[in-house]
Image (tube, rainbow, N blue to C red; front, side, top):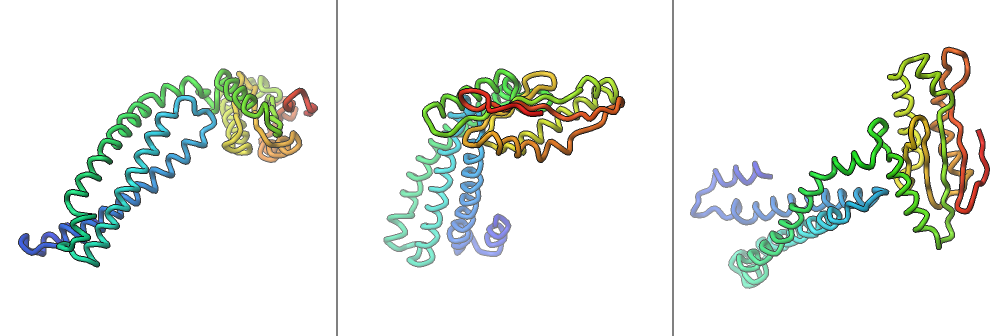
Length: 267
């Protein structure tokens, strides 16, 4: 669209150039703001699904404000384009509702909002890496022990007065020392990472998945029965079983707990 605007401006005379400065510009602006609005709303929805959102409220508000600003500007330029084409640039409707005075007010209001949003998002960007290091396990990328305990506690508190059970799964990898001794620590790290990815993908965004230390992992999820949780973990994790040098099959042991006590362990 920018190329179209440039070409239109070059082939027309500055004294008679109307479309490059108005109609074409309105089309370009409305399209760009619509794309920006769609991207900002998608980012806002994605951030809302993050299980641990304690330190993201300011960023969520900033994203919402920026998305609303982009939506407002996109809609405003669509109105300007429609009035320009239908009524004309010299009409009362265009000068009243989409003229320079109205445009200045709209741009100033949005500018104030966007300035706040950019500042908040800049701070969020600078602190994201620090939050990641404080909450995530460096090797696997899932939550660390302290962050998982906090997330599971909040999940339990949120569901304390509800009807849904909270299922907690504690899992460890069988004979993990044998894997390290037989195949090396690099292979052991790959096993941990693969298992963590499989558990996270199987449980989805609503679950709190973390590494407790070593080869021990934990999952907390609400609204599911222990049998369903076990089946969801079993399918992706079963193909991960390997055979160490001593011939023993290496898999994973799990124990399931629901709110109020154990529902039964299995291996």
